[in-house]
Image 1 (cartoon, rainbow, N blue to C red):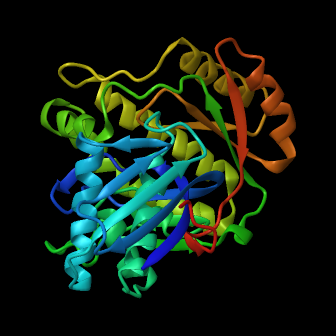
Image 2 (image 1 turned 120 degrees about the horizontal axis):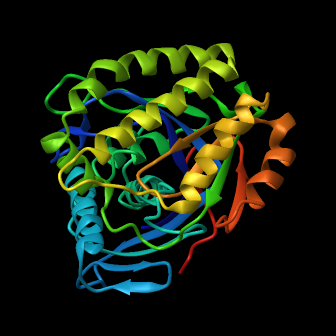
Length: 331
């Protein structure tokens, strides 16, 4: 009853910001992401009657209390209920990138946990069922189950059975597409996405504008991916990210994730685009900017980005593969 899974993180090209149901995590809008090569979580789960309580180790730290432990145990309970079992579990999980810094560690984390734990519990879920399970741990994890370009459909049913991640196109559909992830801060963000969404929905006067326009962004980006139209995808993704941050920045109190290096990158990408370079940006709930480009411009853009003050690293990501089980266990 021991299984190990590996899942990549993903970054949204059309953002998810707001829940219509907090308990089972149903989004207010459909959204689209790219699964990233190179940023992943590996998780080993073992269920056994030898364990008196659930044990969780995350990035070589034993979790003995706190929200993270509660969320993981709650997710294990969900899987135990589905499998009709009571055994406690040992979970060991490792990210190969910074946690909670706006790099979608919860997405890869809960996708890997869902796959490893469901397999260890003897469940054999299909992609849709696995995505629905992962969604209940972290909304964006529903998209990390699949590879390439993925849509998370908001659905309309109250039970969430029609809200899941669905692959728009596999990684090999658009192998030239690149996302350069800039690292300007690695510490955990002060306001987690969950709290930020709630605050925005409650107090931002611009949230209605977000909901009124985000479906159009979704349709444009979806078609742009299928047509491999980089200009359309990049321009719409950039606009969508700025709209999301506008809703955050107009909450009470305001949520501003950007730091001086963030601003430097945003201004630079706009300038480079205006001077003829094929590049756009997107940014999640955090300070780290992702620069969208094609393979032909990667080297030049990486060099320019790393020359900017405050940039610690620029990591090039390609469309990544789906979550999968692996043979090598962490314990």
